Length: 219
Image (cartoon, rainbow, N blue to C red):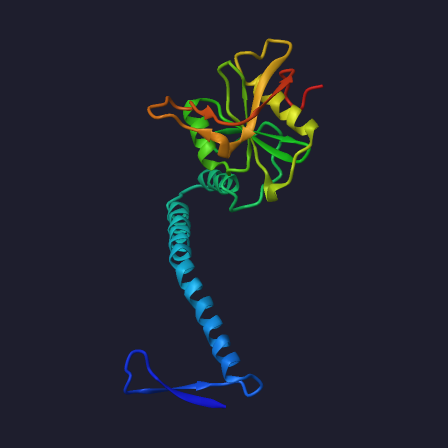
């Protein structure tokens, strides 16, 4: 049921290796080699996961220090909204159009929509967004960045996309037009050119929706 083999570290020392009596010597050897390969693969993955874990711990510790330094309820409420934006807390029951840490927030058929109000907010909004979130912007006109948050990678309906595109059209210089072309794409298909101004991005892949400028709470 066992065999003594020389140690890799010290050949003079013997290591006891248990064997499965139901398996042949060759099968026992194959089983140990398979376990060794799995361990080797795990060791290759661990450094990356360790780095990600340490970064997440540092981020959470930063939030904790920020919370400990707050002196009033208004600051705590603003901090709570910040954690909702980054996905660490579930949303509260806010009303349509309420501000979320500087962003304008709407709800479209249960989907959360965030709107930046200037170049710096647009940049910050994109940093908060996930790669699979959807981004909207009036085509060929200055306007706000609008992000549709995709939770659990669910797919919004065509009607939801049109409504969110209407929000982007409304928050643009083309809001007085009857119909506005609006670019829609995933955040992962946006690129920030070198030396770009705040809020300036390049769309590498997307589609265009033609919609009326309209907020979701308007008829």
